[in-house]
Length: 357
Length: 221
Image (cartoon, rainbow over all chains, first blue to last red; front, side):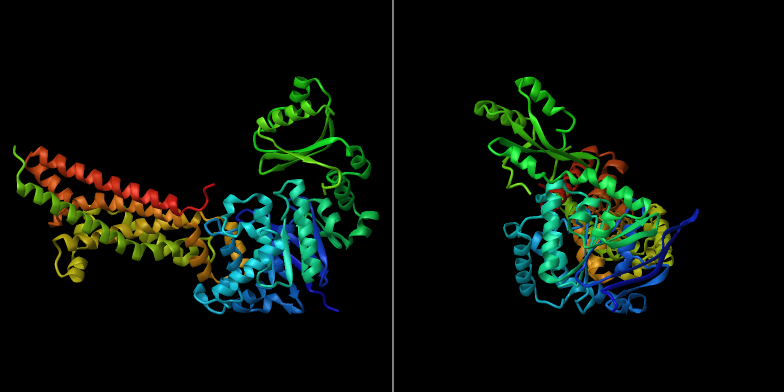
């Protein structure tokens, strides 16, 4: 049976002044309906080009892409646009309209997307009123109803990605392409976005393709995975099989690299350690990573601090991350320490072992 | 020298004529320059519909018109002015060369405003199946509107400056007054008043334009 997405012998060559760059070579993939399919590779491996070939934002140089048995390369411009409405996409940098509020952003595909029959966007397939109603429903699904009138610049990264997901779902797509959708988010937010994607896949049966360089993302939600290295398909199969028996060097490397990322969820014995202790989660923001805040705090109070988890990530050149600290039992001391951290511009939040993940 | 009633009337007329020339030329300038700028941005090799031929033609036209000094342009296109307005002198006639001079300049500003729009947002619209026209109207022009408004402010100031040369063809306006009295007759007081009024006008345009663009920008906070 033909899959939802069939990629056959796809190659993409970029012609530049100096040389021809072969971004993708002879890639064949078969993605079934309802799969959460991960495409993983180091940066520069060509995965972003590959995902853009799936909705023909990039035309492959050779090879074919079929969506539900229909070859995209044979489609006229108009058919292709209608087809694209069924293949939604979310991005690393969210790509929301900055001058439009949340509701208007979500309405965009309904009013002006490929389903709209007329050029110029004068008349979409849906009335403005219906579109707004649908947008409200979608906001409920992504849990942002109170932000309907907010503008993207007033939202956090995670919230922006939720809006982008709502926008992607608006036109009832069959496929959702995610291009490094969690790479600009902190670990905790990444988790919540991945859970949302999982839920969408389960509730609506939408086939999801996830492009990422993080093995933890694949492990967390993907059913299948393809490993891309240097423009070629290195290995593909069920996630469980690849994890237990990686055949190629690239797969092994990614899995080893991925182990470092895996620490983001607490092991159960750590959770037990947190029982009865005062634990806080601190989130690093822009400036706080320059100052050795924790070390200074320990020196200042002369009390040891137990670091239960630490994770930083380089997001657009800024070290961003979080730590979970277990504070000493002295209540007065706890208060002072929290005040100390807050003063230094860190977001401090009390947590217990179970409300965390 | 004594300030007479006639002088006040002259100044009021000057302000009126200057505003007439500037505003009308800016409006016509945008009617021509906006489509031109959109076409430049869209057909650019990194645009949403690259077209080397169309881009090159518009590019050359813009450069040629922009490199002709305004005073020369004013005289060069007199036949066109006569054809459109019926005569080649007077305030209304000045609007034609002002528009011709402003359009490519405005086109370039529109082009650069649209080029500033985040590629990712355009790509998102494309991924939803939006057509080229939809992307222009609903994405490019909307996302760039703050920058476009700043452009309008700059255009008003520049065209106001050009309009001062309108005196050559009897166009009137404050610039004309300043030149006639200050340069030809050495009546410096009148020149100063005219220049101050010009400065005030530019200041008002600038302040209003900036206020509006800030107010319309949704990216703050």
